[in-house]
Image 1 (tube, rainbow, N blue to C red):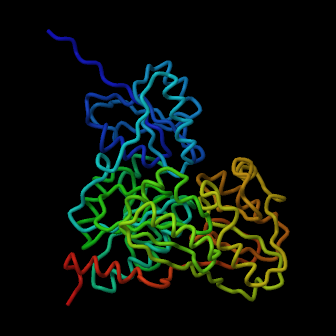
Image 2 (tube, rainbow, N blue to C red; image 1 turned 135 degrees about the vertical axis):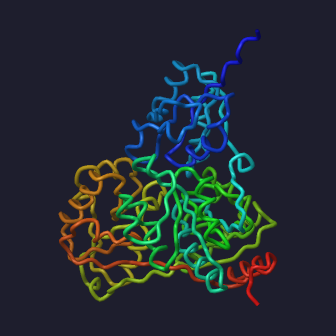
Image 3 (cartoon, helix red, strand yellow; image 1 turned 45 degrees about the horizontal axis):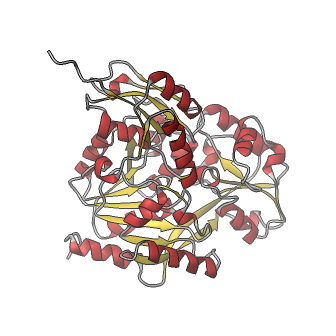
Length: 449
């Protein structure tokens, strides 16, 4: 009797998103592989959890451990790992290769899975909205896109890139249609930042872990799916139209981070965002780069219009600014829309929140030293959310400007007046994004007569 072939032992590196998806669609049911562990990075407190056996399939009767990425070298050595699968996003190209060096030095292969092996096929048309970096403006563009599609009589389902930071088994397949659904799911600040604005305009949002099941559920309800991307990752679903945003406030970043450059090269439409607040030279520089990198793509421009709910309450005041969390942290932005809006409204002073940082907020500033005089709205877990509240309430400010898309005042008690900053996408110049999208709809016979 021939000897049983030994399974290839692998580790999947990630941040509770792409890593789980790659496992589900490539490795979960393949007896040639044994996933020994996931490693975790980028998101606080996701290491130490386990990927549940209920989601892992018949080949994994026990949970799969999720360990800190710092243990990668030791894990490869002690477990005799054959392959390390890199499966997270928005990291500098140099960081990818430094990580590869750790794996290679331990004798393992270092692998990046591509779209052909990881993209799911939907039975309805899919428009994907992706970006070269976190914080380019995908969310506001996706909302604008959903309104355009619904104006043409189409039923739209929004599928969001995963953010499963809680009970993984309960988060396998999620459908959000009302704010009560967010409460029932115990959504974090980061999840609410993405979901609440969609729900406010009547969109149904699907998310979770098992995207084959998620797509199957969404396509039952929709004429068309809009993929609302996370970080700078490429879509989990094969797009029929691929829109990619670049940010002229960070010129050069369109080719500096993984997999943002991949996403850029895949795009059907490249949208230069925030042209209303970027220097013209930076806009031209980014446009020259993207045309060189992807000459077949159509290139358009868009603006990010920021509005304060009550600008008069900001004028002449000491202002504490709370920004969208991921944009400021691993998005590498020193400040965001809230800071700009507060200055434009005539704030007398922008209060430095670092002087009042409490608990885990201190660690956030230590880990991301690029952050300026703004407070990122982090709340991946209750202790972090409490520290955010303590920092805001301790700050010597007259008013708080919150530019997080979620209603922060509904989650924590704030002892100061709150002015919300909202930002929406607007088209600028030719070709208009609406025209490009409508041409696609016409080709697919999706426009009503």
